[in-house]
Structure formats: C-alpha cells, structure tokens
Length: 342
Image 1 (cartoon, rainbow, N blue to C red):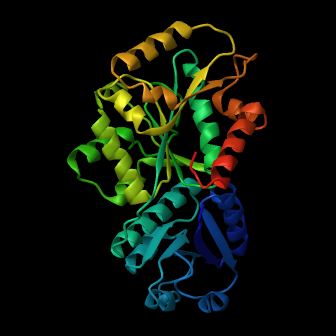
Image 2: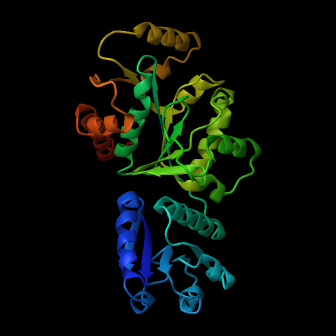
Image 3: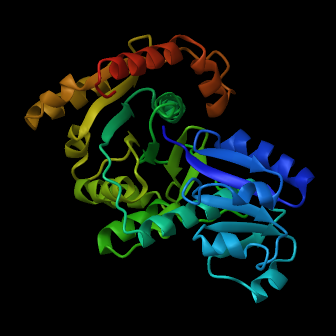
C-alpha cells in the first residue's frame, strides 16, 4: 500500500523523538515520516515531496517560507490559544501533549481538505469481501480483524460492521461518537464532506473501520441500496480498495448485497453442530434463484477455543501464527501473483 510522506521538524528534539516512535508504532502502515533536526535542512526539500510538515514551537514568521511555498503545516504547541491569535490559514495549530490518535485524525482532515482543494477524486478499483456465520457468529469479528491485517499489508482496507454487538470499537473516553449512523444519514441525504467522513473512521494497524452503530436497530433498517451508496462514498472519497463486510442482521436486500461480494467466508465449527441453520439458509438462496451466491461462499473451519475467557484481539494474534493465518496469507499471495484480487 502506498504510504503518505510526512516531514517533521521541531525545536524540542526530545519530544520529537518520543512522538516519532509513538506515531510510527501505530501508523507505520499508513505514513512514511522523515525526520529533520533543523529548519535549514528542511528548507532544501522539494515542496511537493511531503503532504504535511509537522512542526513544533515555531512562530508564524519562522514558518513563513514554508507557507509561501504552499506547504501544509501542522504545528504542535503548548501555547495553543496564544498561537491562534496570530494564526496563518495554511498553518494548523493543535495541542502538543495529547493522544496520538487525535493528532492522526487532524492529519487525515488536512489531507482530505488538500485533496478537495486540488479537485482530486480518487478513482479506486475496489472489491467487497463478506464474512458471515450461522453457528460461529461470536468469531466473526476476530476473523474480520485477521482478514483485515492480512489484506492491509498490500491494500487499503475498510471494515463495515453490520453485525449487532460484534464487540468492534468500544468507544473510549474522549473519542468522537460519530459513526455508522452518521454515514448512513450522509448516504441518504447526499450531504457530507470528506472531513466529516473521516470523523466516523477509526484506525487499527493495517486496516480501518467505521465506528459501529450505537442504536443497533438501524442495522436492520438499512437497505442494500443504502449500504452500497455508503460503500461508494468510502471508496470515492477515501480510496479504499478492499471493503470487508461483517454481515449480521437481516435487512432488505441482504442477499443482493452479498451478491456484490467477490467472496464470502462462511465460518463454521469443526463438528457438525448447527448445520441445519446453514441448510435453511441455502434453501432460501435457492428459492430466490440466487444459486450463484453459493459458488462465492468459502467455508472456513474456526479452530476450537479451549479457553472461553479469551478475548477477540487475543484470538487474532493466536490465529495469525496458526493454520488460519497461514491460509489467508497464502490466498492473498496467490491472488497477487496471478494478478487477481482476493
């Protein structure tokens, strides 16, 4: 996946080193961060080489040359109110000591605004991949996370969670509460901006996700057309190449949306328990004349979890280095080598 190049140059070199280590620990899959230790060394770079320059404790006058060159600047400062008094429109000021994800969200908005100003719309070829189960639903979200990690090594991945109470993205204190409800509203009205879309998105290493709904009833109230419009917004405005849909609740046009997926992973257990639900599901597909959908389904046996207290993300790490992770890596590699998509 192509990374966005950033530059950083701060007066406080000790803080700069800590920030770079923390930032790259979380976002090295998305950004390439080049470190400079003085303004003089930064001034000789090609203005078009870096999307944003991260600075710290420099005055507007000291940054004037970069502003004249049209570069986008993000200044991390302890004196935010004082800095805003002399704000230059091409310099964004934010608090120096805050959670790194908040600074990353500001960077996303700056990049979105830059793209909109330049009149660029990303024409991105994308594919949808579904994940579903009728007897192993509890493991859908860990499997989705594992799939996101695997595909995210090469492409930009978005997870769309349509499963009620999946456990994805428990909102931490201080985080924005915008999410899937807001994007569904934007898809309905057509009233949105790229920066507002970004406010509904959170980031994991190698994959992103739309913050899940707070009112789970709205999942069933969505429709195929509405979810397809939402996916179109994410692809066109943000440039996602893989959309992983975690299917759950029944909604109007669910099977039709499944038909838009190039592949659907059907999670099952190693024993035969619960197969009558799958048989009922397959019978419904046949009644609706959608037998081709069955050809896109790939049954995946979920390894037995002997410790039922284990949490989802621990399962992801365990699976990553087991047969399940190896299977997904081999599939991704095989598809890439044959010039096809997974």
